[in-house]
Length: 304
Image 1 (cartoon, rainbow, N blue to C red):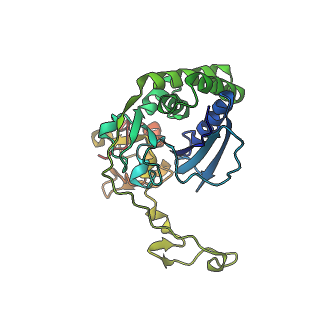
Image 2 (cartoon, rainbow, N blue to C red):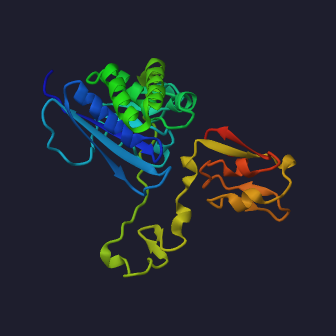
């Protein structure tokens, strides 16, 4: 094999297993005879928040320690991420993308037109693992999207890594997820019509933070700061399932209103409810606690 540095950037959400996927791909690369490294980058460490992870593969020792800004392969574990972050930024023109979506590549707008591999990893994960943890499904798709690390090495790495941490039974279920994804991948070229926009950000320096207290309420470079500013974070895109409110069944017991951890359920004057889907993360507590079955959970990020 010739000298070749191959860089992979993963974009996912906390809880989807992006970090484990990057580490497993690196382990698979080592099994295939390469040198490899993997590391994550976290923002806010909480379930559902955007997460990045990186894998570098080379035929020689790797001295680079930086994040990956111009990946050869872009891996997106949540198809909603490009709507809130410019995830395709820096992808090489000859690069490829692996995306968790039920859409064929030709119908998916990534923001750049590249060779693309799509797979409905969420459905596979729900079927094989009973949870929307898509990392091993996406690893199966990665085996189809590059020619350095073969599927066998990826499966061996899944067995080693997940078997050691979760046990043999869980490892076998993850193997099945990877194999199913490998066989269901659709390939083609994605669309490049989406405008890649970076959201407004402001990071305080140490001089901006008063010692021992919170930031003052105000605005910096177009970003609201201080107590009460979290309304800007529309966390509704994090969910994989959405509650449907069936008002005819509602007995107005208010349990969902009290139990919602995000405060997304609004109590109306007549004690019926309304959901603010901009912030609903789809945890399902409202559906579980409802005695009248007036809330049902449906797959997908929708609004009613």
